[in-house]
Length: 221
Image: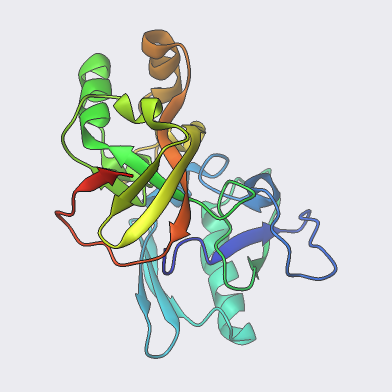
């Protein structure tokens, strides 16, 4: 997925591998589950000059190049107020070659369902924003949570082919309102109460890369 999780925010206690080229788990980084304000950060990427523009409701807009050390320091200073005051300090951005720092050890793409989101919203009594779940691909149509029945199957969307590997176990980040960065809905308790687990969406492994457009149909192989 172009641009997805290319960089991860390491902190002063992150154990960076000597090679600096290895995947390491998300628990090694500062992220929305422990820094709720991160969830209100939005961004845009300029492919022509490699700069990232970050926005947050309580901070001034920042544009920087993560490959430029001086500009990287500007980013670390910018993000610091959003980090837990008693937690580790942001230290550097970590990148691994040509793959994203996905939550799974294998490179993965997340597949989520609008119908599942609607049903969960109905159970909770509040309309949930898709941004809480940070999905790569959202499907519309079908039955709520039927994606869990597809584990092990291969699918095609557009010209890309995937294998559905496992459910996505959710963390505290989904409790946070992505507009203001404040925890307001206990999504994990709702998932456990109504479904007996805290899974939402599935992880897929890309078998054949390709292009996907809005409106493409999901086809089972």
